[in-house]
Length: 357
Image (cartoon, rainbow, N blue to C red; front, side, top):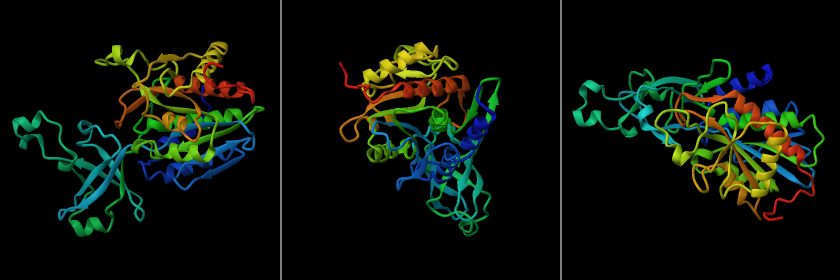
């Protein structure tokens, strides 16, 4: 079971909003926690937070979990004091109308609002059967007119879904920020676990930024660290809900263990080591071919940095991805921490990750 200190950190991380490009509060949360046990913590110019153990060792292992989230950005303030906005990252338009949000302002902190649209009574029959475009929605912060809204909000301010955190039953957690603060949590917990062990490698736990806008933080942090091994932790699609095509996505259930992928982004030698480690320590895993043949997570960018990196993706099964009510299972989180910790501890300077050797 996760300790109370770890659960407190998880709640604080999930209750700290940071849409892509505006991750500073989340970076501070991640950095303050890892500073308790890391040898060194720094934030680079892109916004990635890098916490290191044994940083001068010649063999380098990078762990990546992105702590940015999907959200919005204010683009215009109307005469009525309503805020027009654009998406930041991949937004499911069907989940947006009526959503409670927070405009993250510099002068007035978090300003509550709600996403409005034309009432269903005033829609034509055709409009009722179509997803409403974001440009036809607005955010209402209760301002009476443009002048009063401009005293609080500025064009360009980021907007996040309202913060939430709930434990469901004994093992499951609900939050709008699980993609991918749960991954950032895992890499922080791996570093904490490894801080009590004798290491053969330098370990860099990185909270990466701007993943939702094209894996940008992983690109710069991996180039700067120049790791030999890179393990990304992200969320993956849980298929234990109705109407998911298991023939395409495979089987993945909450509580079944972290998902290990086999596709072009995953080094076969590292994959074999992780599976051997899982078997040795009786850690549950779920085998996956991956959502696509390549790309989509920080793994792909780490793999192609400089002269190439031996990479692996560990995914936490997630329901309702890119919505305000994502759900993961803490047992999968615990198993991911144990799997990655034991794998990194087993790496020796002479370990080869060249395929076929």
